[in-house]
Length: 455
Ligand code: BES
Ligand code: MN
Ligand code: MN
Image 1 (tube, rainbow, N blue to C red):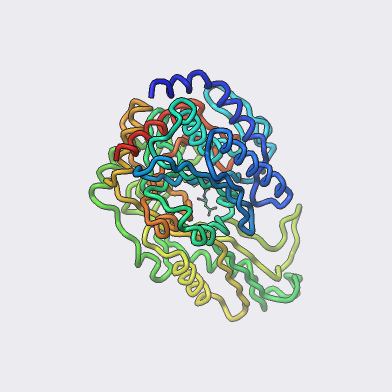
Image 2: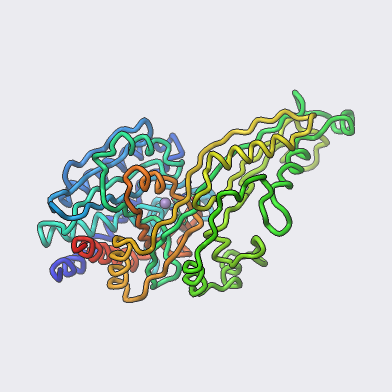
C-alpha cells in the first residue's frame, strides 16, 4: 500500500497533465458537429485503459455514441465493482461568459477550469489513475473491476438501458460505483445515497393557421400564449405544492433517521441565496430546505416561447405557443406515470379554442439506497481515511437516470462517491474541478478497493 501511495506522489504532475489532455477534447454529446470528437474521446479512453493494464478493452457501438468498456478480473473470490461514468459533456454556451476557453484547460489556484472537468471526466479519471497506481505497484487489484463509460449521459442515456440489458452477464457485479456527484462542502467527503428522477415534456399549442393582426382579430380569438400561461399557472399553488392530480401518490417521505442526518448538515439559506445572487429562496411550505432540494419533487418551466421577440412592438396574435417543462421526481415516483398524469391534467385544461400536442421527451427514476449496505460502509471508511474527515450522507437533487436501471438489472447497490464541489459550475460557464479532490479522490479509491477486497 505504501508503494502505491508513493506512486501517487511521484506521478502527481503527470496525472494532472493527462487530465488536461482529456479535457481538451470537446466531447459534447448533444451537438452532431462534435460526433468525431466523441469518437476521439472514446478511443483515447480505450488507449488509457490499455496503458494502465485493463483487459478486454473495447469501444462498443450502441446506435449512438459508443460505450467504452474494460475489465480486470484476476481476483477470484473477491467482489466485483462495476464503475460507471460518462465521457460526454454539456454544451458550452453562453461561451462569452467563460473566463477562459472551455476546452483549453487552465489551473487557477487549486482548481482546473474546463467543460467536463467535474462533470464527469475529472471524476472518471480518478478511477483510471487509482487502478493504474495499484497495478503498477502491486501487479494486481484487491477486487475485480469492470469499467463502463458512456457518451450519452447528458442527453438522457438514450441507448444505455438497452446496452445494459444486452450485456447483463458482461456487466454483472456486486456493487456499481459512480463518481458523478458533488460533495456538500469543501474538505468533507460525501456519499450520495439518493438521487431525484426526472420527467421532461414539451407542450405545443396552436390557435390558428397563421399569426394574426391583434386589432382585426383580438377579442374574437384566443391567444395561444395567453392560453399556455393560464394552463401552466395551474401546475402549482402559491405555497409551492404541485396541483397535478395524483402527483404525490407515490412520494415516500424521508425517514426519521434521514431527517436527523439531514438536519445536522450545516446549511445557511442566506449563504445559499447569496451564492446564486437570489434575493430570497422559495420552496414548498412544511419542509426543510435540504429536504425540498433532495427529497421533494418539483415542477419547472424550462423554456417558453412564441410570438414576437424582436426589438420594438408588434401587434400580433401568434399562431402558436410552446413550453418545455420538467419535473424532478423522488424515489418511487414513476416517470412514465407522472408524464401521463401531467398530460391528462394539461389536456383537461386546454380550451376548445386550442389544439394541443404534448410530447414526453426523456425521463428516469430516482434512486435511494440502503445506508448500511457493506459496500457503502467500505466507501465511508475509504473516504474518511483519504480526506481525514467524517463523511457527509447526502441526497442530491440532480438525476442520473441509469442508476435505477443498474440497480434493477445488475441487482446491485449503487454507490455514489462523488468528488465535485458545490461551486463546480456544472452545465454552466467556468466549470471547474478541485485538484485536491482529484488527488485525494484517487487515494480514496485505492483505499476503497482495499476495503471492498476485505468484505
Ligand atoms: N452529474 C449529473 C447529475 C447530478 C447533478 C448529480 C447534480 C448530482 C447533482 C449528470 O451529469 C446530469 O447532469 N444529469 C442530468 C440528467 C438528464 C440529462 C437526464 C440532470 O440531472 O439534469
Ligand atoms: Mn454527470
Ligand atoms: Mn451533467
